[in-house]
Amino acid sequence: MQHSTSQHSTSPTAPPPRTLCADLPAEGPVTVEGWIHRRRRLSSVTFLIVRDRSGTAQVVATDPAVRAQVDALGEETVIRVRGVAERNPQAPGGVEISAPVLTVLSSVAETPPVELWRPGLAAGLPVLLDNAAVTWRHPTRRAVWELAAASVRGFRSTLDSLGFTEIMTPKIVAGATESGANVFELDYLGTPAYLAQSPQFYKQTMVGVYERVYETGPVFRAEPHDTVRHLSEYVSLDAEIGFIDSHRDVLALLREALAGMVAALPGAAADLAGARIPVVPQQIPVVHFSEALRLAGADPDEPDLAPEHERALGAWALREHGTDFLAVEGYPAVKRPFYTAPQPDDSRWTNSFDLLFRGQELVTGGQRLHRYPDYLAALASRGERPDAYAGYLQGFRHGMPPHGGFAIGLERWVMRLVGADNIRLATLFPRDLHRLAP
Image (cartoon, rainbow, N blue to C red; front, side, top):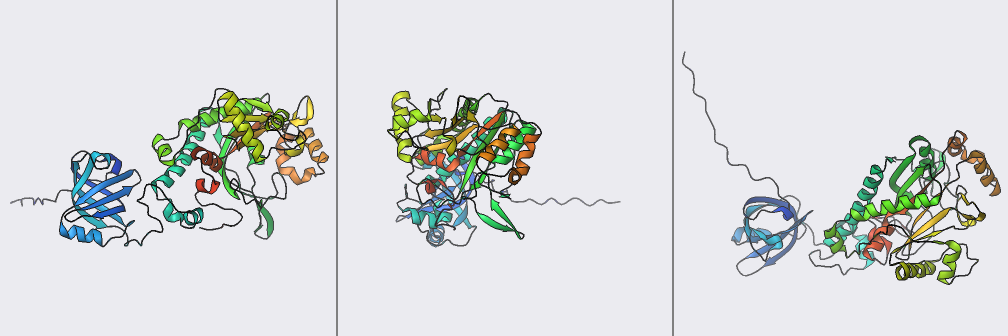
């Protein structure tokens, strides 16, 4: 029996896999994919800058057909470039791509509303926000949210290392967390409901399960503020810890979380965004609220700190303690929610604090009530009915440890990091008094 000989077909060499612009080798065949960041045509050569998530790469085209192809493509068109990497000290990263073959991966892009290839964006705030889908592509804008994302990673990893459990709680709730004045009401299948002001009640409840919990997620405030520091929706980094002695234990935990967030910040993004990375002191300085009023030159009967008081206190902390951080403890009970624990020696004040970062409130935290009878008394003193909080109070009826927690406003943190004059510059798609799109 005669066996047929096998036929072997020779396939062409497979193209190299995609390489990020920041990882180009010094030589050899490469494939990059990204957006046309900029084109520059000279008499005999066209320079093409391609941008991907890692950075940019320079492509050099001398072939007339390729140059004509580049001419027909608008900036921000998505392309694949196959070519040869070669050393060039003048190119980004010291490497450029020659002999390119271009493949268009999107429709030809329309002219962007801003010139993304320029080192900075000169557009005003309305232009940046109205065209956010495109303006976030600019490297300096991208870097801002990279700092936010890294901060969340640092927050999570720090609390994970300390034995915390991450939770996700409802954002549609049956009642207001702290008061009925600042909530967004909605129709929940025919029943009135609200967007959650915070995960406060749920994270306290879960202390009764896990002792240490945290959450990162949106919160909603229906406050008619039209300021540079307020939003109707923002990201809150919340933590709650059981078995504490006082609010100072909560402040110590906050210090660890902030240090972890700072340690996670990428230097390259910080440089691009113009951020000043703070040093978190081993011990954050603390002043009592009554002393803070004196230091700020405020009326001693003021129930809260105004923005100008916060700025004055921030300047004092930097001058006297050499730090961007200052904790103000002992806020008046009339300005704190009913679940806040009183100061043991004087119930006019509370075991709570605000943390100021560079002269602006960043964090609110403190110790909570944990005994069921204390909750009944606190609600009665404010003319509120316990049955309106039945689900929340159930955990306290069945034993809760002394506990406390805090909440960090992510966008406000990033705003202060990069020195922005408006929180909307540190928010992907702001929601405020006037804006519901994009």
